[in-house]
Image (cartoon, rainbow over all chains, first blue to last red):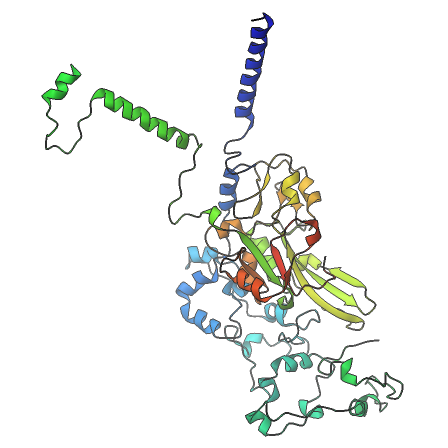
Length: 240
Length: 265
């Protein structure tokens, strides 16, 4: 064996040992166990304390309210949406009490009219809708229903009614445009209400020079179309 | 001599303890040490007990129905509370965007306080063609660019498909923040490490859903497992036309949107 080979081997061996030692010192524990990361990092993420207990926990003690809510229009609204994070209340039920908001502020976060909200979601104008009264004085948050007997049409056509309620046609009754035979309530699909049939019907308001109502000239305003092909009568758009 | 000892004590003794000679005992001890060593030194993971969380059994994703979002911002607030995200300066793991598309075709996007306190009503509805809310968060991409660029291996994808940050190992270099095409990451102002949505991983291991899903009052957010396992997400994906954000980047996001407008980026 040439003289330099053992020396070279020794150098390689030293380098290999140095590499192993350096790796064992520099590479953190559990690195590479599951992938190119410290497996122990997962444990530190899991160790984070939860703040929201989850509605299942609430139902263990408050079962009657939970059942009432599940049968109501708020069945999708879990307890902690309104009552706030309650994990510490679950841990010490007597010492820590969750929030119980009773003013108007929380309800309007969801129910104030906002044009970006989806069609048919129940909304009100908080300035006009019983100002200063807490919502709870008429609506039970665990089982909210409209406080008065609902009008006949909106019992079935709720989505249209809710949309119309925040539109420029809010003050019009359904019967302004539709004639509803009494039998429609008994046999809704067989006996249909009437619908406006021509442009002149809309022109009854919109081509009469009534102040405060948008006016058009029926002869020149897109005469080949019916009004409702472009304008949705239950929620007419606003253009300047 | 040992042999003699052994013979002196008959094996068919009624005593319940097994008779072991010294050589056998030492051999067994050695074998036991050999078996225990990899476990003690962390080379082999101890198999999980039945009730323990097994990450390999899950693969998570989220579904968002844009048509159901009412822009109340409860998700943003719950996330901020649940994950101790500082309120000032303003960073959040999830946020809600309001899109306003005008009659001229102009698209205006805003997100005041990340949508945490709701959205003020638009001053006028004149000129609005359509408008809607879009909740956003980390997409927990299967091919996450942020994981790829991390120089130290502090950002990683778990076996159950959640992208996490190793806060004890992150050097705060901000590469991942630049790499994320969704703007879902930020530098945590107090910890000085990358901050992001964890899908509330500490809740998942307990069998709970993320805080934003828990508090969403209209079920615009859904959580579950992708790949056809029977969860709410599975049903959501069957009965809706779903799409992902920036699919052309091939990051394979696991947040699926239903009823998403083409203007949303």
